[in-house]
Image (cartoon, rainbow, N blue to C red):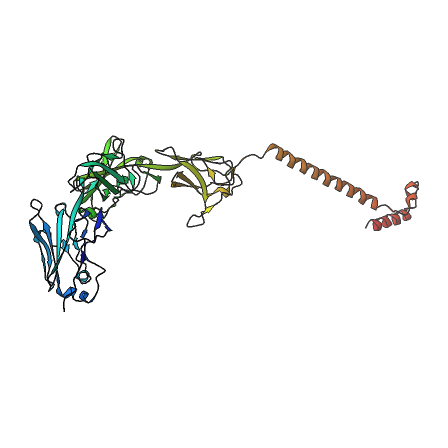
Length: 504
């Protein structure tokens, strides 16, 4: 049985910055070009025509072998073996490219003879040729590999504030016309223009914000356009550049010093950190910390006082390069207007102050529930406050202190980003405030007492008068006008007894 003839197609996959874009060509031995970024993977395509399926397809894996060769850079006629897969499945790989080159067995059985190179090196650029043997038939694919290189100077790790040079070039031999740079998809201006001639981009003092995707685009005189993308990682600190830590006087404070990446991700296994502060004319230093797996080196202050406020510096040494972060500790305090015990009825002012203000802070006073363990907010209900709502401003005024004002008062400091810190003040009173009553109130009491006494006196006088009138016989009023006469002695004594009985 005569073997079925096979046709081999060469499919071009144009690689742009390590990403592969499929393309197709149906003509044998026509050179195709693939671009790949150094350090990424490249696929040199060589496929069996998808239109030629049949019985010969079953025999493809049994009677087919593939040989990939590379043309010499100085002498193109010289061919160097890259990878060979024999009928039996035995593989032979050139030592310089082992183990970076491969073909998949499953792909071979499906007519896919593409060569994969991972990772790509700059010296891999050149012309590659594949020869597929099927019985007495030989089909070939020719692919040219171009390599785009993005280099960092200095090499990793890239740290904050260390000058950085990004360079972009390729193996294309035509004259370079211009280079354009893009950061996270946005054009980058260099010397007033978004493109430059030399192909390099210089960053004087890189920061963490410079991390991300950097894309270079090269345009050559023959209108060939080559591009590559590099993901730049800069080792630095988390958080703002000059942070401010707010802490209440008497409380604990933790000053942060946290890297944005683990040093081990950059191949760094020895990290040193120390804290310092210049105060009172001398430099204070804290113990040097060493940590190989962590990225956080905070400074813990158990009790913060006014003397602890000021500037602090955290220095982290990685790979003989030092990263430094300065920060400010601002202490929040409450100053009462009355020194010593506060008496009931007193006029009290509580002033909330802040060391090292930044100018954007504002204050808010709230009363906290002393009975609640979690200090849930209760609205200030004191009848003495000018405003029953939560008060703003650095000063809280209580015109007349009462038992209802006893408890915990909190002064919070807010900024554009929200609450920054808070300090608490416990208000206690010593007892009732002794003072003379108002004059008007005293006069009213005296006048009321006098009226009451006069009324009671008049009632008593009337009662006595009525009692005397009740002793006289009411039915014989004419007796009052009888003239007294002399009676016999015996009758006089009887009359006395009669009067005594009447009085009883």
